[in-house]
Length: 233
Image (cartoon, rainbow, N blue to C red):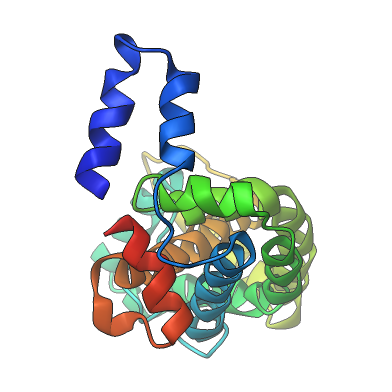
């Protein structure tokens, strides 16, 4: 079915796209109702949130996950290198770990926002996601949740830095760097940076689960998931 859909979409340059969409709308849905299809997409996203996003809230959920581990912003990578070069690797490691701990704290605020976004998925949304790219569901959630998540994450990360003394650690780390000869002083907004990186991490892990469900039949752990995602195979 996916090959047929691809032909339909590339044919828009020759035929009327509205007419082709009518053809797509008339494709057999395997005995599934519109409600079934929408429910299947909601179920897939709920599973992704529960299975993948929840991992990020655990200790080392970011720090030991190479897909989402938060590294220093480009402006501070020279800080990290300079400190390690003069034997202060432990200080650099501690500063890096605290960035990731703050993100792990913040992601605990994500689930209710995702749940509300998933509840709003309509049949049209679900159909567009099924016929879309392999990360179409992730893009849908990004559009629906990014602003709200940023607003939730930012104060949590700011408080997390203060709670564990990260603000003092980073001030010490940056001051040590700035005191080195032949360096230019740096002072990036770490809270904003880590908030953005935490958001990227969340959507990365949702995309991982989406790809699993789309491409691996064994990952479709319910009858509804198997029937709905068979439509896009």
